[in-house]
Length: 551
Image (cartoon, rainbow, N blue to C red; front, side):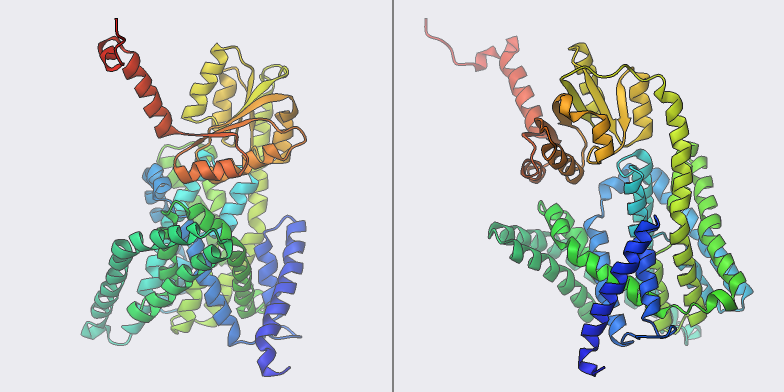
């Protein structure tokens, strides 16, 4: 094949095989990532047939890394982390420390250098963002307390890995002259560069990027808006590497994090998603190209030990920490199951270690084997937990209220606002049904005597159980505007659309909900200001504020 067509060949063959094997994995109830990795194995140099260009694949993978990290930044929420900081921060630190120690011990037993063993253990300690979010979504746990803790835990792991990606090159650069203080000098120089980049982004980028996004959004061109988002991601990633010597990953992460603070952050995430998904697929394909399946035959014991660290060791550590911090066994089991796999950050770190000659191909293959096997087995763990929850819910379902009468209200979200609204509807003798994805909230609602359904209201089976065709109104009290928008759109697309009222936390959230079909979106601050004004104008001491009528 001519050299000038190698890029076209790897793109075409990579996408086609990734689609075929990803679809097959999905049919087998596995994560599509397994299919993407296997597609890479097929076009790699360790299997017969077509072999992708080994120089182009890493560059395509680097683009995938940039967009993956940009996506992590776009979904980074300091508010979510603060809400669960007392369990996510210590839990993630302890779990990562335990897993790294176990990986270091395995490497030490195999005779590896300490630096390689530590990087190997660190690669086994962090879960895949993609796999975890998809598992929570499929289990309808994304907006539950368990889901929020798992996401907060994941944020801490991601931040730790971003730091590791910055420090590992410094450690590699000083490996030969540690006795002369090279390590300290390298770390100091790296810290200075990273500090300068972070300061520039927080001082200048925090104001400049949202301003640019706002102006481009004002043009009304979707094409220019999408191009602006991608230009910010790629430009900042390249600038961070070229000007400050830090990784593409760190630059892309900060670009996403700062754009997330913009009122158009949710639109940026939505518009860039197709390209991020496409290059994420190529990233996993390129990782699969590096994997040598012979490791499964030549070193089966080491593969099993690696898999045990991922699925047993660090999961037990996570379960124990969550229980010691006072959370229920249900939450502890969910967190343990969520972390029983590794993925993209592990690949990025292990690839960096190999490129810096800190890691051997054998260590890389062990990580890849552990990743593929753990991603394949992880859905089975969630299936066991789902059956366990189903049995528990079957017991409480016997105490559920009688079937709903006609013209009931769909109360979607049973947080603080939903609980208060349920009380007011009960006093007014208005029939309603609660829908929430958190099983603990559903149990609370049922204990109060309400009819309640656990699940995501955007799912057909959940919505069918709530009988929207017989409902008079839907009220969305869930705080996430993206999730609320999906639910509003689904309710309006049904055979019998019903009026939809929703809450919002920002003007951008109001706009997003109205665009998705909500008939009204109420901003909490406006409602509070209106209520306070009414109270001021009607209270006896302040009636003097009203215009005086002439006598």
